[in-house]
Length: 138
Image (tube, rainbow, N blue to C red; front, side, top):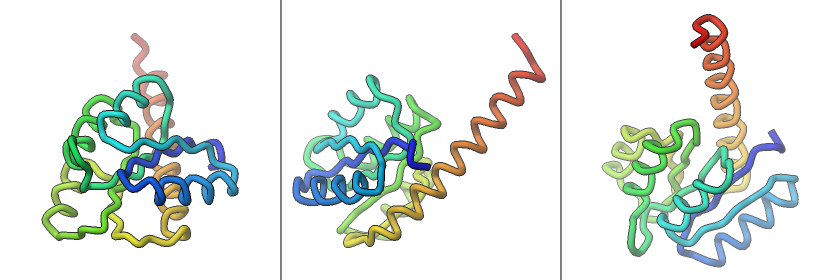
């Protein structure tokens, strides 16, 4: 699990800095972005496993960013983080493929649980994909 690369996307610099430090102390590699546009550009260059994504950001909001991530990087798991919780946003995010929806403030324990569960899901998907490739070689 510690080889899981995490991306934090939020326009709150303090939250990015604090959360990054906490994850790094636990041995994770963490990338940070302050906008959806920046996150998409970084995903083009770097293999990321789990993205924690704020919904309310200037420019491209979290829902649009989620849609673009899931379309272009379907194996990346996205956890929506928001301080502006609404049931509509949660339902929409989950329908669009978000792994989970967490309301700020969120504990490090909750974040770690999401990383563990998302990593396990990614590993299951990769095993199924590799198994299907063995059974049906091109």
